[in-house]
Length: 205
Image (cartoon, rainbow, N blue to C red; front, side, top):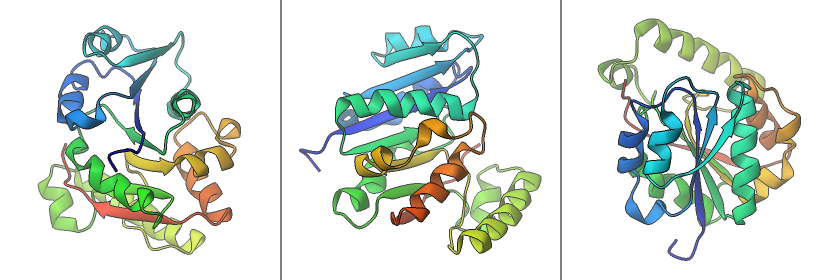
């Protein structure tokens, strides 16, 4: 773990109110390689991120969630990382759990990990997840599990980790610029035989 190169990427859009809190929750030992890609924000996300010492890339126009992640991973791979962590800068995910998220990848158990907020209905709702969002998430999750022949508890996590091998193997630049991007990454990873795991994380809205 101590010799591994971990790069954290933050796909940002109007995250000025939460990016500082998100950054400060990241364990100090992981703060040396953080990239934020701003997707045409209308607030001062970029200014705040730069003051925090985060490496910032900006899109002159909004490309969409998938388009943002494409830039994130393209820039992250230039660091020759062992693992790339994607963390939404909206403070909905517990960044203090980064070490737990990346450990299964570093020891070779998995190639792709994500944090699941929906290990149980009560924990998700008590954490502030709107009921409609919870039930839609569960229905879509069941359908995707059937289609992909997997048994994940969530498919929409904004807290993920990928091995460099996986990111170099999947053609992510050809994927959608929209929210379906995450599902395309999952499908590509499974089709190429990569192993995917999850850890429970607290729900925080």
